[in-house]
Length: 398
Image 1 (cartoon, rainbow, N blue to C red):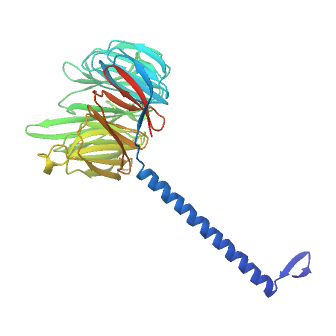
Image 2 (cartoon, rainbow, N blue to C red; image 1 turned 90 degrees about the vertical axis):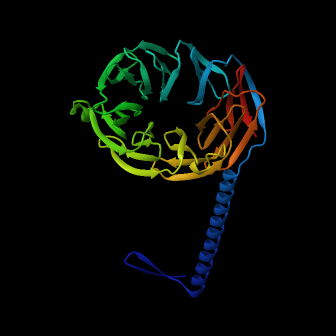
Image 3 (tube, rainbow, N blue to C red; image 1 turned 180 degrees about the vertical axis):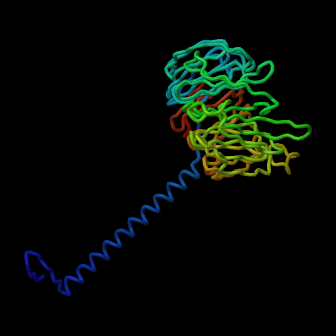
């Protein structure tokens, strides 16, 4: 390579041999990059197939937790473990099935809500409320009217929907005792409240109302704000949306920026916050039988109207926060309960359970000789807690 120097700058003049060598080097690099890209694509495809078609063959009992589960109300994954609750108390088990804390109370027909570091339990149609922290610290208080529904925010604010003598009340409590808000709702104004949803920061509340006008019915999804925006309104309502000829029995926040409202023949996705707006409507041509919602996903189990005479004709649909359907799967097994794991759906029956991934593949199915009360994820991959009437087992799948 010849070099010419001028005014302190170096100029390089390449010979034809150097040009050919550079071209060969560049071609080798391109081949290496292409081979690397192909290898990455192959690995990605194998990973995708491994996830999509992963099947577990055996269930191993890792630990037997002997306790009377006959009066158990349920269990669910919480933090890195599992919460078990009943009318007599609540306990937290870590990922290995060890009991970290156990608290006793007396709550008939318990309704449970959990978010962040708090869990709340209320007596359906009763007046008792219990607020617990993730470490098991507990506070109890009573309210003046029968409880219809309960929601808890991540910092411990509790929202209650109450049945009053001449109307309903929405009340918020801080730390389990201090009443922050009390809003009376009358049937003539907004209708009959069916369900409530509280944002994780405790600032926004959504309520589904049923309005009956003669033989006509409609639903109203109303948004309340307990911050600066709501203070400008007399009833702290910052927006509402009406839907004719439909009933919306379920509203749920999917993170603080999205709310889903699930009706008898449609799903409505809202942008929540200061200025709530309707973002998407999904029309359903089947009957909604079951619903499960997490911060990221919504699972619907639909019953096919055309096959109602054939027992067990169901279709599972999974949607993301934008309302896009990411999976649809038909199945025929009867069940009592569904639960969402990280990227899986559990179907629990009296004597069996099944696990489907979000690709629609059934990863595991098991029949039992004794009645199953509940199955809950533990927060650890492939590990679950199975509750029977006389014991609870920590199991793993392989």
